[in-house]
Length: 140
Image 1 (cartoon, rainbow, N blue to C red):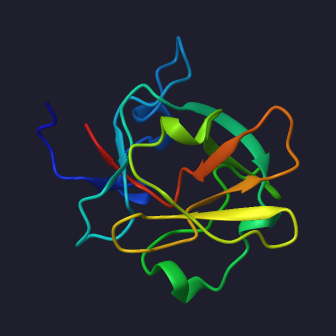
Image 2 (cartoon, rainbow, N blue to C red):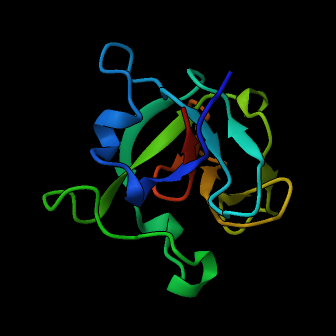
């Protein structure tokens, strides 16, 4: 059972240490929609693995997800960022998918349609579904 209000990535003390199990690289908290008024759980605790990928697929105007920081996760990671990785779309608790744009399906909150919060490259093999760590809130 969770006991805290969801916390945005940029408000965590040591984000990558706070949200990742160092032994398994799995998420230590439920991953929720980035919108404060939405309570949608996107990924349950322990279901996703932290990975690093190029960030060019999620370029978007700043105003789309207000309050979500787009700064690099560390100063040496320009052009790359961290994502929560799932290998099967059924591993999500709640997520919406866009129509395919080129080879990419964008992920959004299933309840309020906020997004994009991540993406799925339809040509990736094996399949991978990625949620940007900065485009989520965390409930411990």
